[in-house]
Structures are given as C-alpha cells and as structure tokens.
Amino acid sequence: MTQDTLNALIALGEGFTSEFKRSGTSDLGRELCAFANATGGVVLIGVADDGTIHGVKDHNKLKSIVQSLARSVDPPLVIDVESVSDVLVVSIPAQNGKPYSFAGKFYLREGASSQQLSRNEIREFFFQEGVIHFDETPCTRFNLEEDLTDTVWKGFSKRASIPDGMEPLSTLQNLGLLRGKTMTHAGAWLLAENIQKFSLRAHVSCALFQGKTNVYILDRKDFTADLYTVCRDVVSYVVSKLNTEFIIKPQITREERPELPVDALREAIVNAVAHRDYRSTANVQVHIYRDRVEVINPGGLPAGMTVEELGIKSVPRNPLLFGIFYRMDMVEQIGTGIKRIRDLCRDYGVPEPQIRPQEHWMNVVFPRDPVKAGLADEEQRDLAVGPESTGQVTGQVTGQVTELLPVLKGGSLSAIQIMEILGLSHRQTFRENYLKPALESGLVERTIPEKPNSRLQQYRLTEEGRTLLITIEEEKA
Image (cartoon, rainbow, N blue to C red; front, side, top):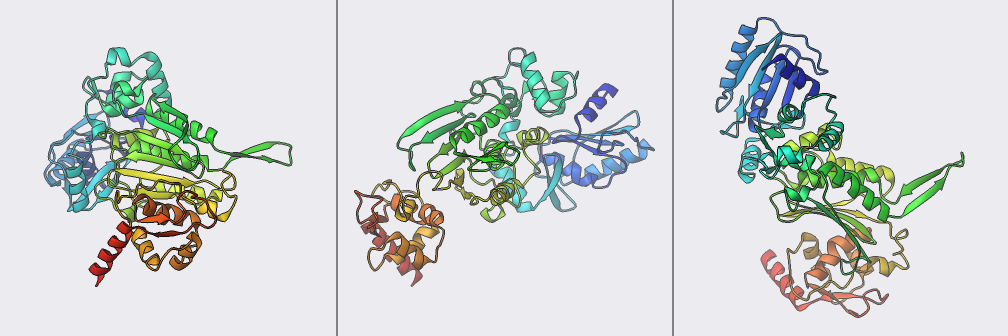
C-alpha cells in the first residue's frame, strides 16, 4: 500500500470496510473476525478515530502479535500486515470459510462497528443468505466508462461526504463498492441514473387509493433513480398526499404539520429499501389509503431474527448498502430503526405503527387519524371493513382470528359487542388484526353484506369458520 492510498483511506473515515485503532491490539481479534464474516476490510493501527495519525513503535513485534491473533481465529485467517510510514496496515481479504469465530464468539461487521452474534444466529444467517449477500455480488451490467459519468460521481461523492479531489475508482474500491473492475450491485444502485437498468425490481412504487381498499387507484408513480434519490422522492410523494394542518404562531408565522411524522415515514421507507430482499421479483411498495399508510418490502425477517427482537437488534440483509446509507446519514446505528419509528410517532402524538413481519414480506402500517381523513362520521363506519371477503379460507389464520371465532360461537354480534368480550378498546387494532383477517379468510361474514357500513351490522361464523372452530376445540380437548 502506498502513502497516497493510506491517506485516501484515512480521508474516507471509519466505515463498513475500515477500522482505526490509535495504538495496540485491544479487541483486534474481534475486529479481524468481524471483517472475515463480512466482506473483508482494513484495520489501521496508529490512527485515531478522528483520522489523526499517531503512529506505532516496534512494528515487527506488533506484526507478530497481529499474525498470532489471526491464527487464533477459528478457522485461522490469512491476512496481510505491512508498514506504511508509522502506521501498521492490517488487510483482511474476503474469506471463503465463513462463519468465523474468535475466542468462541462470533462477530459480524455492521455499518461502522462489529456486533457479536450467537453461533446459531451466525450459522443460520450465512446458510439462509448463501454466504454472499446480493448487494456485494458483481453487477456486470454496470459499465464504468458509460455509467460512471462526472455528473453521477459528483452527486454520489457529495451525498457520501467524499473529500474533494479523490479519484473515483480507488475511492469506490476503498468503500467496497467496486471489486477489481466490476461494480457491485450496491454500487450500481447508488450510482444509477435509472436503477432498473441494473436490477429490474429495485425501484419503489407508490399508489394512492380511494377509500380503504386497493380497488380504485387515484394515482400511481414509480421511482427509478439511484436509491438515495428514490428514498428522498418517495418521502416527498407520500407527504404530499397526506393532510397538513397549518398552525399560526404568535409571530404571525405559519407552521405546517403533516398528519404523520415525516421522520418516521422516512425511517420506514429507508429501512424498507435498505433491508429488502433484492433477489425477490417483487419491489418495495408504499400504499396510501384513507385510513392508513403501508410500507411494504419483499423479504421477511432475516435469519437469526425473531419478532420479539424487532427494535432491539438487527441483522442487515444488505450490509454493504446499509454501510453506505449510514455514511450518507440516511440511517442511524444498527438495530434502532423500528424503535426510532415508534418513538417518533409517540412523540408526535399519533398511534405507533403496526409492524407485520411475514415469511416473505415486511409491512409497516401507519394508522391515519379517521377525523382528519374524513372517516369518523359514526362509530360503526370507523369499525367497518370493506367487502374483501372471498368466501374461501385463504392465507394464514392468525392467533387473533382464532381468539375471535369462539366469541361468535353462540350467534351473531356487533363489532362493539365483540370488542367488549375480547377486552379491546382500540378500534384500529380490532379492525386490522381481528375483524379484517377473519373476513378476508372467509371464516366470518356480515349479516348485512350489501351494506357494510350499516349501524345494524353484525358478524357471524361461516361454515368454514364453524368447521375450523370445531377442529381447534378438538385439538385443545
């Protein structure tokens, strides 16, 4: 490594593929292991976190310690250690023996830090993800001469806080976005003028619907620029379709307050783009209804994650892309996205969104204020669910639906009566988690199907619902 290359690495700062240590080898074994389990990286010993070069003494002794730590990783690592002026440069190439452990523990590089995982989590993670993450794979459709234009580079370098005057190809290599002469998919998505040129379904689709179902589309738009621009423009589109309250301040100024917190919407949209499964033939979708906003991305919970751990920990499906998003200040530290969304909604004075992980999808649903959306003419109308029922059992029966079925065993009841028996007070929760799935599954039906919003409306079990209830009760017996 030359002095110029070293200076360029330091100028970029710490990130997904680089770590600075002012002196010594404290926690170095952990860092070596984490880089080996990711895409490789570089540790600069003798450089402070802020990029100040302090240097180290006795390089030969330090090299011996570093090599010994590399051999202590299980399985042992092959690394390169060299001196560049006063700095000791430790290079960890991409490895083929994943997963790696150090002192019996497993670590993974996430963003600009290393996180410990249990053995089962790390094994499952790499098995499910096929060892290689799709965002790290080569994108052969990206032509460096045609697609990496001065305009594209200027926009990217500004967003990624690249110092002026840095050479594009070497900088992209140092960031891990360029492998040899081939761009990774993460690099292509971040440098794209039209992302569909490189990944047909990497764009984001937005749709505005009339009412509370997806029967009538009022407006639809696809966003196909680079991922940074896509996220920015999708947020602007969604906010433009929401109601805005104008608050007059004493200083005769006007404050615009959208009905939902913009930062929470942005976090949900960016998370969907960053964590989606790009191998899927589906794309990220944002649906705007009169009573809710849904952010939907292909790819359920990553391996090693449970529903209970949402908002507490995170296993990024696209670590290289997430690392650059972190550099661009689009995301905060790993594992805080869901918690941040909930906190933002709570502080804004609106209901927390419903997080609905499925096997192949992740939905984040923001309830809209029924009064501001013009839906609260009467209590029954607020509880009503559109006529989506197919009369057949379709999809998975949730635990909430199986709780609702015994309530209707004795006959038909109104929505309010069902809520009282179940001990529920939040109408949105009842409608979305209990009533709507039961109707869509064909297990429950209306007594007045031709008038879904009737104040006399009641609900009863269908033949399929009664059959399922008998089965459930027999299993419990």
